Image (tube, rainbow, N blue to C red; front, top):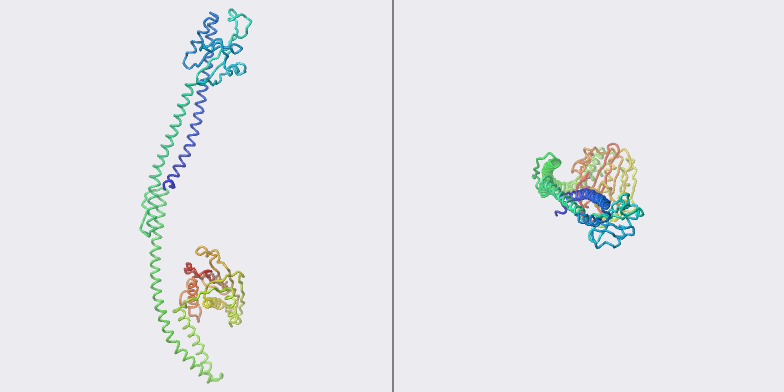
Length: 506
């Protein structure tokens, strides 16, 4: 768990950055110090070579060659000197701080340097025991040397002085260890300091926030984060507390709304049962009244002034009977008998009924069908859904008393907006579009409420019954309307019998 924490990731990132930065810096410093140490060793070799050369020249000018070996041996024991020797032009060692070398051939490297143009510069010699910087200087036969050596020779020998690199390498090693230790210590101290800072400034307040969120997730909306800070985390805590306060307020309002809805549902259920009972009691006497009125109407001639009265009574009885049927349908909903249904064929059959309605001709309404040929089989109750489609069409027709166009369209998948709550591929949609007067935006949310109507002779039960039938199929209905341009009612039906979230939508 710690390896996945933000603190570990931040510390690891900073440690890597510090290690790279300090490592690079230490490498450059070490490289510079190494270069300086090597330059010092080379300078030392040059100075010692010049000193030995001067000593030999001075001694030889007074005593010829008597004390050359003594000088070479004396210089050879000086601390830091690996060897001092003189060899001739053929590479044969004539004098050496190590007597065993006399008469032997000098190292190939030393002799090669002597023969090259680089002989005036110190060079690094790789010995069997330790490395050294060597300097090659020819001993020329100057005027003061002619007394002992004559004038024939131009070169009396070659001085080879080698300075040990042991001290230099030890100093370089010490510097490397010091730089490594310093870098490692710095990285550790900085990471520890940052870890402590993160723990105090970030981890503790974030953990408080996480614990509070856990309480809220469990349903405790009284939980609050206590952070008295003026930084970003303090602002985050204040925003979180404000959000929880609003959520708590919304939750209380929602619970109150649900409680009111339950009370309203209970009242509606009671009213529905009462209305169903009353409707049932009224229905039979009403049928008798209708029969008697028809008998009376048959006894009157059409020119009898009482005949229009009987016809008006029959119309009112028919209207009252329709209202009673709606009440009974609303109070005692049918149980859907789900079967796989060709929804395109169902729409075509519904269209046949719609085109036979007298209002189509009387109002001058054109009906068009736009059905996608790939409409699938849908599990539904064809009788109930036919009633839904008829109700939708009747509402659209009644919204166009001055004529217009009714367009019925079918699509095998819902529009993307529905996908915010439901997967669009799980639904088919049948839409009913009219070019009527439209619905005011403040009335759209009420059109599915029982007994709400904007029609003079409406019961206010058509759309509530339609919505309930669709919800019984785990579908939903949406409405888009613009005053003066018309309305679009969309019926969404699931392609499978698996119940979906059928929350109301208008």
